[in-house]
Length: 419
Image (cartoon, rainbow, N blue to C red; front, side, top):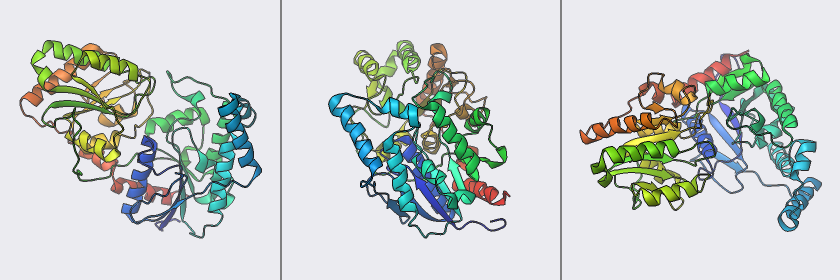
């Protein structure tokens, strides 16, 4: 492929349902920008429903049901559901993965073996802790010399940075699986430089294979929406969009906001701290605190991605909240959405994180998540700008480019030039 731009990319992806998870949103953004760059794409996905992305050919992989693996997976599922017998821990300790995953992997292989796309590159996209596409391609040597294995997060949970310390069943076999992927794939891609370094520390793969492909920014126009009752565009709105997984503790943010309201009581008429997302680890706490502090709003119903995206663009401040840790190698899927919104980002997280690396060590609107005084002072400075009618745009053309299709094209050119 040297000196010849690959024209055709076969993509094998867990899900392209943008309402499913942040991982799906990131996958779809990458697929769209690959298409916008000019590559001819064919997408195989395991979303379990028919979905199309513009005029890109997307094939929904059907689950194979007439085989022993499927039968065993269903027996395990029914005994767990109806008899309360959970054999999954034993199965994963023995085999590393569930029989459901093995059947899903075989379903993907069966579909890919019928393909005649004749791709120049094959890209597998994971989602959270699920790597079905990687499992399938590992069993297909015909693709190995053109395989880009994309890894979104550390895997398995056993090697997550603190505070996410959890050794799941079969973690030893899962580590062996990742090693096989790294040794087999032609290229290994990560959305984050710190994640690449974190994984290399644990797996010591060939760095010549490694490349950073950040989550992508897709330019879009605001779609007309009906604003939810809690949102007035003219207010001083601070929005956190996305699930608050365990570790992303909002208490420091909330207490800093409450101190702000105490110092500036007049702000109670127009300042709103808004949490958008599904039920999460902190839902009960948020519900309790919002009943006391009326200026804290929580979305009660599911909100579609386009609606959330529009609200982020209309907010005065968008919030990225990470765990209390020494390092956060993750690039959140919503990072490009916040950059595209062109509003200040209130970044709450460790001093060493991919978000802070990209925004810069001198980025002003940053704090550790439990530094209540710094959170208050940051909100105060933003509020003073709001009162002066200062739109306070982010204006980070460097990050616009870093997350753009043009940079993506350069990355793929560099892959092409690798031996």
